[in-house]
Image (cartoon, rainbow, N blue to C red; front, side, top):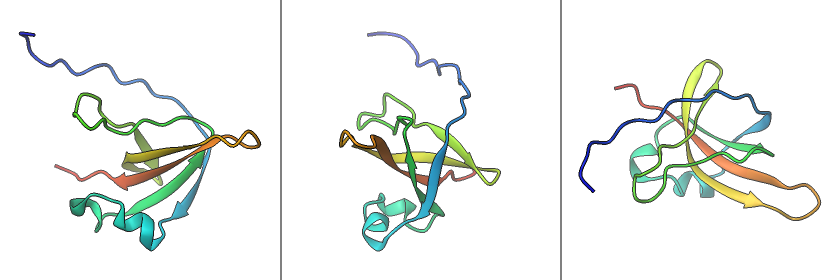
Length: 95
């Protein structure tokens, strides 16, 4: 596999969800360098994508109150009654 990485095109979409504060347990699940950033739980019926463990996929970026947030973790909650996803979004660090 010879070649250079080429970033894919961004695609914007609208989804609806519920923004909630993180519990202490959820805060501890964040990677070490992200625990001091503004972060939220997002409950939505739209499947959001976090970065994969190998770094081959970039996380979805969402906008909350005009600020960019990266999706850190996604858990499917498919119980057959109200299927949804629980995602953790962390404020993107400005480079």
